[in-house]
Length: 242
Image 1 (cartoon, one colour):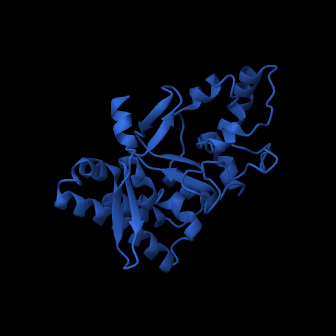
Image 2: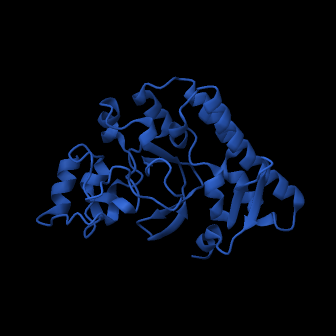
């Protein structure tokens, strides 16, 4: 499938290796990419889960939208800044470290003719639980995913966020969710249930980083608590208005 898509899309065009597409984010994974997991080309620490409700760029609409469902992508380098979306396999010379074995989205994509990539959007996506099986990770990882999602879903945050400026209870509830997410991750690592670099796959991106979409900066405090600071940019409100 990938070779056919590639031939139809690229035709005589050639990639100039400018690296722009790779800096806009790693590819999402689809069923044809299962072999990359089975061959250990991609590991859990190479992946990042975007959970339902998170904001992503919809290439069809060319704007930011909330994800209707889960999406697993190749992650940025471990420890990268939150605004750094660069695929971890992009080298300093704008080459792909796993060239020839990259996911189907990479093989389908050509920046001047994105139709083949758009055709893959939302089709045969691999979610965390399917990938967990392919990774041969413990079956109880599924239970960790479910327990975390029950307490840290974006639906609750989205309902609370517009009210926290004037409603102390809403603010407290919002903070409790963010703090639970942080504590859950710390406990998973403490109990050696997963490596720190596997958490972005297992539990999705930490809420300390993602609540910026609500125009809030969650800042850890010296006493161990978290302070919410209003920023000048509420991405979710911009989404509503677009």
